[in-house]
Length: 114
Image 1 (spheres, helix red, strand yellow):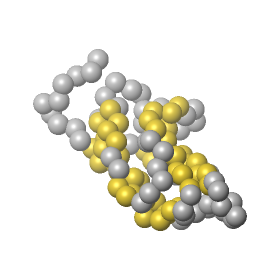
Image 2 (cartoon, rainbow, N blue to C red; image 1 turned 45 degrees about the vertical axis):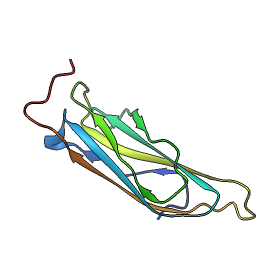
Image 3 (tube, rainbow, N blue to C red; image 1 turned 90 degrees about the horizontal axis):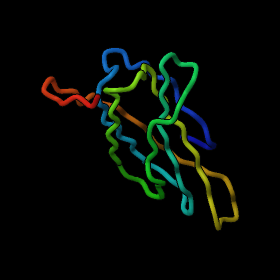
Image 4 (tube, helix red, strand yellow; image 1 turned 30 degrees about the vertical axis):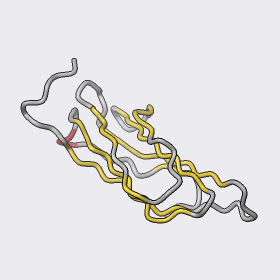
């Protein structure tokens, strides 16, 4: 459950380093007249972060997919960041319940991007 803008825990890719990942955020709760922006950040060493992908702004509960191709990037750690905003409501409090999962989609026969 999130009540403010923040960032998730740093995740080391381990054996998924350099592979395409399928990212799936699942939003299970949102307040009316609220938006959620989720972005994915990567780092080679966990110190300097750069934005790798952004989901389109979400207003409703649901499950969404995003392919993140890391084959030609020196990214060993990932983390999610989110921002929430609310409009037209008497109470400016934001609230969202969501999760983000990642699965490797690597196949031995996949083509090279470099």
